[in-house]
Length: 345
Image 1 (cartoon, rainbow, N blue to C red):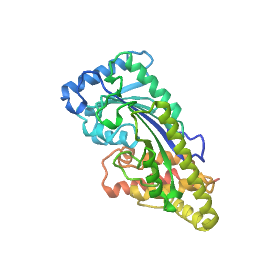
Image 2: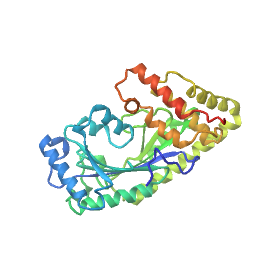
Image 3: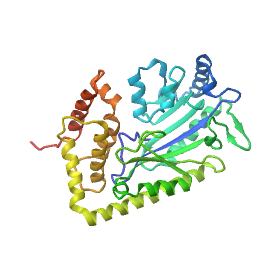
Image 4: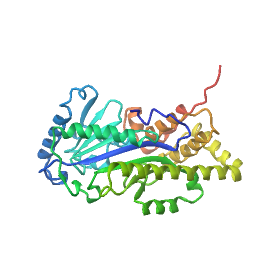
């Protein structure tokens, strides 16, 4: 399974990534928020032992204990969509198991004892579900889950009871935003059991026209139904976005191209860029790439920049703590480098 930051199979695909998350809890063990640090670490050891019991996992995966990481390292994992803010907030007693490709992350002692997450590029819900399911089966061979015959998997939050499955896709929807259709779309999605969030999921605002669409209902539906419903909704949203883009090109071709090329020009020459401005400009450039207007920038580069312009990534890139203005300067420097025009000597 491919890393969403470094792979793109279709430049016209409006889905940046697909993600699957399975919530599980250990039988006869209080939920993580009720556990002491000592008991939490016992849960971590139990999950580790169950997972690494398979010889196939030892070389490909490693455990990261958040109490051993500094604040910037923790934040970088969040920026890569590998862990949640909740895991960071309880870093004295949380950990996650990560594979080398950074496509699989098993969070331990988040809201639930175990959260299996798989993420890949494009619209590939079946692929991420299949891998999540295999990891789930591997763990269940050595762990007893909290499960009820009528309710399904028991979780800390009632909204996750049942399958414990949350599937989501990260989409780029600039034309719907420009055409003031997002509010109507959000209301329509809520009515069919879907929720829409920003770049970093729950609690985050949609910046740079990046939205995460996910199922809201986990009880009373099986996994196949959840995936099928979400995929159908995503395809419908994609079609609406494409129609909106076509209309914009028909009515405002010069204005749209001007907006796209201005954004690229600013990104290739700016000396200072804050993260929000950068994300908005990158959205315009991504629109140009997806519509075939810009030919010399790849979506892989743009996917990479979605993470690497963030605060923790910038500080890691330059190996030191930076002030706000220093981050803006180094962010612009990084973007200029990544989007530089390749000239023929």
